[in-house]
Length: 253
Ligand code: ADP
Ligand code: MG
Image (cartoon, rainbow, N blue to C red):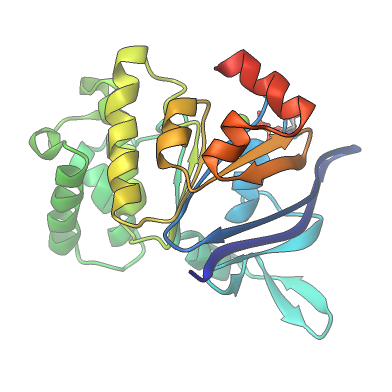
């Protein structure tokens, strides 16, 4: 498998506070990487850096062979213009904890919006594709509902369909089930499972250890801005080598 994402020596500070201290990570195409770590360890910052919502201070991120956010000019990196950045971002789906659907649009139009706005599809084509995607997340019958008429689990599934609408090379999930009532977590994890089975490259920040065990190819444990440990789930979850990983797992398991 060739690498879909290559993160090399990424550093990120907010003011004097360095939040990522040199992160290296390779994500093969078609694989699922689950990122675990305590609150404040830099998980969201790392995901946001991958689509240049946060600018890194040092290091590089490549997605599908393209350097994110910058262009190499000699031995310097010049930041790309807004248009290029938006084009790169369109290739990377992002699903947030808080769904972030447009409240004034139906489920169908939430999913159809980006392909229309980016000129990728005409309105009729985008809406037809949105219907297909809503079917994939089990919501074919709720296409005309507004977000407020949907449960949290349904809203998150619409958000996943929306993330698929531009046929991304990669999808990032930032705690996609953390805002859900416990009985709604399963339906969202089922959709992630189906995406994984279909070969979607995903990076998933989650505390759902059962999901990680079952679905992840690689589990990464991030602590205080460093990858402390990474490997197959049976290694990191069942035979952690580092005290910090053990301490974290003893709290969430
Ligand atoms: P996690 O997702 O693992 O909980 P985050 O990546 O959200 O961690 O945050 C890592 C650290 O960076 C935290 O200390 C947080 O307060 C800080 N941080 C995140 N975003 C910002 C920001 N925009 N400005 C200042 N500090 C931030
Ligand atoms: Mg976070």
